[in-house]
Image (tube, rainbow, N blue to C red):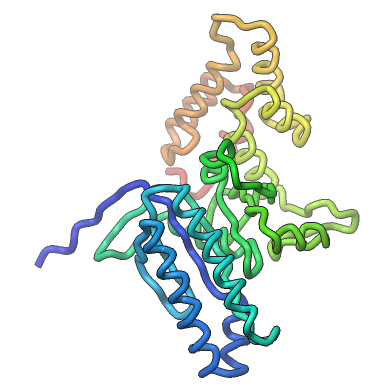
Length: 302
């Protein structure tokens, strides 16, 4: 018997779970299940109303896909509003709040279930906020930033479990999120040093720099300046300065920096030692030479 075919497509993914679900179950299993069923009925109805499809559920979690980013985010907002009203009839210690993450990305569908990085990122986004809040990826924010009705808090680059690269996260500005921000509430993932400066390992710092550069390298002068403010001596600082200069005095010439970048872009994700070594042969003192040498020492490069 043949295995079911795997379908791939682009989708907006909504992932939600209940904050403090284990605590609620420990306190009163029957009451918690009854509240969960009532809250799920609200969420399920709104997902259907916004043309979403529930892919799977497990315990207190919900995973749904939408063909429209706007539908997914509007659905998330209305879920939080509906559940907030429902919680108004419950004692404070029995109120049930969902954390919601929304991502846009490539997904795989098998037997109706969703898989892939697009799903994993949505699940990790929800872990960055508290119950009653919504966290979205940069792609979702960019898709909606010029539409009215949405305001976003930039949570910066976030390193999350089982995702190799940092995620640029944004919290949708709601009444609850506004109150937390005004009170100076920190994300669960935040790790601050004695002066409020994020303490990251060298590997994490490099990952954050790469992620920021990837997000601004083709952007506006303002975005390039943002990179330089955070990494004035960074790997891509000279390239950022070159690009800023080019915006002030456009040129049709292809610079050595651009050739360096183009070559690195073509091999940076390769696992072949020969391809990375070829970059070093051509650009032994290039902007990415240090990264190339680090990649050559990585165990996943053959």
